[in-house]
Amino acid sequence: MAGPAVFDTANPTAGLLDHLDERLAKELALIAEAKQKGQKVIGYFCPYLPEELILAGGMLPVRLAFGGELESSVAGEEYLKAYSCPVSRSCVGYQVTGTNEYYNLVDAFCVTQTCENIKHVQEYLEKRFTKPVFRLGLPRTCDSTRSRPQSIEYFKGELQSLRAKLGEFGGRPIRDLDIRRAITLCNNIREKLRFIYEYPDQRHTLLDWYDSFKITQAGFLMNRKDYLKELELIERSIIGRKPPVEADGKVRMLLMGSMLGIGDHKIPDLIKETGGKIVTDNTCTGISNSRKNVTVFGIIGDTMEALAERYLYNVPCPCMTDLDRRLKRTSMIIQDYAVEGVIYYNLKYCDNWRTEYPIFKDYLQKELKMPILLIESDYSPSDVGTIRTKIEAFIEMIRGI
Image (cartoon, rainbow, N blue to C red):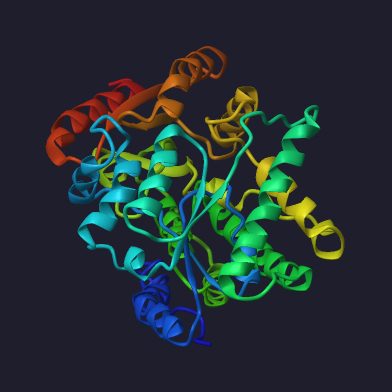
């Protein structure tokens, strides 16, 4: 393994992610090589899908959390209505255009039933593009007090079914021993990611959110054992190093809302350009991925019970109940990261997040006295000027200009 990154004293973050970038650049070729040796590649979209089951089956998990490309979003309109969200249209559109190499390498898909649009994505992937699709049902009722045990029983049954189907597809049953090994690997990754994400909660940091988010999304694509090695390298590189004094005067922002996919950088770029600074996020492609480990019980006891517990009782998606828990989680993030303003990013036609915005707005403004700005957009560049003006005005309001 390579040694710690060498830092430029004038720019302490220079070179920090170079090794990760170099490794990620090789990933497509390595996946293709693994396929030639008979290894299966399983693509999935939603963080409720336990990739431990894919790993335990000897297959490669790839989270297809791509976004930001207008061409694929438009291409998906051939199958999904134009007022479907850009993410769901892109999931089909990448199959239409063939422009995403990760999609092209996938042997089968795992689709979690989170909304009406993704249900249709699953149908088209299976019927029109004739690739195997394994469905995972997700209960809509989720509560942190566990007062509805039927929810976890249902979810556990869905995971058992998925385990059997993946084992059949992979050519061998998925053993508990292999699941335990996969849990240990994924827990180690989550612990490293928590360190990386929690490291920038101070006012003075070496890693900023843009670095942390890039590191997280690299893990959607890379071989997980290699990814853990990269995280260990990054951790060793920043431990004990004194960060520079932060004196940029930028407004500290929380970015929350719809899925922020790989390649969907329009809003983060505009926030940075207009004098804001994202210090953390509350999205399903960011900090939420690493929030909770599978318990030790999953390593020494009932593996499926532990997986169901970890994935169902994480911070719930807006497609599920327990809005109070989402509000409290957001409040905690705001306090921990000294947030000064919230950008609520809603992809057009994403009903799950858009419906909850008025409640979040009232809660943040009245209970926390926290300014919040709704940005509704898609993958078109046509609204960049309008959004820039909105964010600039929002930042000026926070600064009291």
